[in-house]
Image 1 (tube, rainbow, N blue to C red):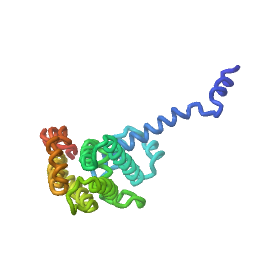
Image 2: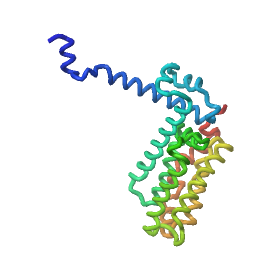
Image 3: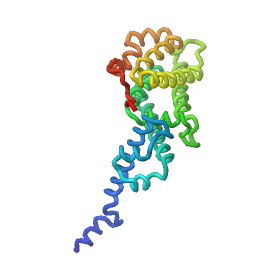
Image 4: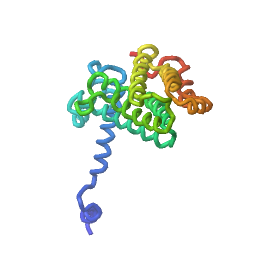
Amino acid sequence: MSDHAEAASRDPAGTRGVVPRQARALATRSAILAAAAEEFADASYHEASLSRILERSKVTKGALYFHFVSKESIALAVVDEMEVVCREIVDHAAARGLDPLRTAAQVAREVQDAVAGTTLRAGQRLCSQGFAGPHRPGWPFRFWEEVFLDLFARAGEAGLLRPGVDPASFARTVVDVSAGAFVVSLGITRLADLAQRVCENWELLLSCTADPGWLEGWRAEGGMGAVLGPHLLAGRGDGRGWVPES
């Protein structure tokens, strides 16, 4: 059998070389998105520069335009990546098998973990500036409201909330307070004190809404400080935060 025939017999569909090319293309696209997330996390959409994205990604202009037709298409892809991260956060927290209120606290911890990277910060900034795309208005705020509404509704059914606490109102309050903490921390300490703000906010909200029996057990475990422990220690460092100086 000739070399050509032998190769064809091993690869009857004629796909030799396709997988390596696909792998290179995926790697290039990932490099562009990682660079774009860094850029959009540091600057607004209008301030972000395609030339800086190219410089960060170390790809050619031709490679960038092979994958994306414009800066807006890159921004939408970054938000796509953020959506994946958000859904993974929820799945990972749920997999721990905790009760609904402890799961909600773990979601907050997982978000804090993700904020150390750029995808979540970039996606949230882009969404706040109106670049979530017409198919997902209000992302990620609507998403987190739905997540916490589900958790708090189940907490109410399990008797973990005080009588009269409305799960929908509680969910909206958590999202409102969390978004506000992010904005304030970004403006004052460039996110260096975000974990401390998250800890204080959750302790206050749970003290007002959780069943006293549940709250006693929660506090005996160390409360939100135990959940966020490593981040609280990190927040006592040099105070420069995660956002680089411009």
